[in-house]
Image (cartoon, rainbow, N blue to C red; front, side):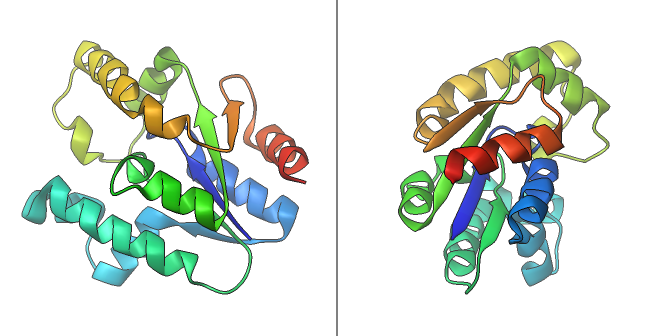
Length: 170
């Protein structure tokens, strides 16, 4: 079985995914890390040299590749993975999708504190970041909410989220 964690950047997909894979005894795969390893470039480098459109094509191909892997996997997708090339429908056909939903203020706080260089956030002030998140969440809501399971993840620790998700899928 494949379990796909979807949601906005910094919503905890990787952290919760690692916990969930331990609880279930599944393999864990971070789609962005898979892309970086396969292409021998960081996501930032791909965005800088080829742009977002090219990255989304690579991401779509990588999603299809990991879906073909044998075994049970928890897959942490990128924040936009489910929103392009009908990927959410593809994920729903090939496994269980779980949307980690967080409030805007939580996402802003996490992204301001994050040390990860995120191409779509380059050069944004805290206010611009807040406005960006509101706008993009509004655009992506229709994709995120196609998830088979939606979890309000604001006030829960990754271990508790993993246990909750486990009980929801069993």
